[in-house]
Every structure is written in C-alpha cells, then in structure tokens.
Image (cartoon, rainbow, N blue to C red; front, side, top):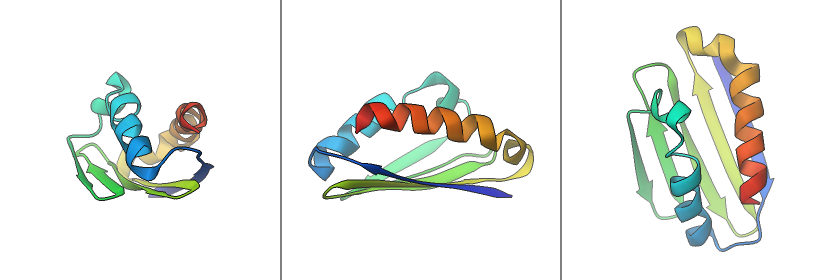
Amino acid sequence: MASIHIEQPIKESPEDLLKRFEQEVLSLPNLKAFVDSYEIQGNRVTFGGSKGISGAAEATPGTLIVDVTLSGMTALMKPFIEGKLREVLSRLG
C-alpha cells in the first residue's frame, strides 16, 4: 500500500475549485480507468475504484488538499501517479 498527500495553494473559492477538479481531474481518461465513482459533499470530493485507487480532495480557503491511497499493483505506480497528479493540480492552482 502507498499513499500520496499533496497540498496545493489556490486562489479560487473552494466551490469553484471543486467544480474545476471534477471537470479537469476526475474526467481524465487515465483516471477514469481506475476510479469507478466519486461523490461531492460540500468542499470535499471522495473517490474510489475497484482497481486500487481511492482518496479525497478537500478545498479550503487558500489550499487544496488531496490524499490518495494506492493498493495492490497500483502502489507500484506511485511515482508516475504522483507526478501526473502534481502536474494536473499545479494547473488548477
């Protein structure tokens, strides 16, 4: 098992940022292959899948916090997944 924790400074409101997170991150074809479902409640998005990726993103004023847990074979892909996630999140900030 492996975990990824990223804190990204943001300038937008938490609500606007979570809308962009849903549109620009959760809709990525590579992520959709691993994430079966997600739920938005307030300023928090939780997501999970049967292929070993689950986590949450929470937007607070000034910061987006993303925690991802990788299990099974996806744990071996941690460097790749973390690099891509940081790249995508830097565009949101």
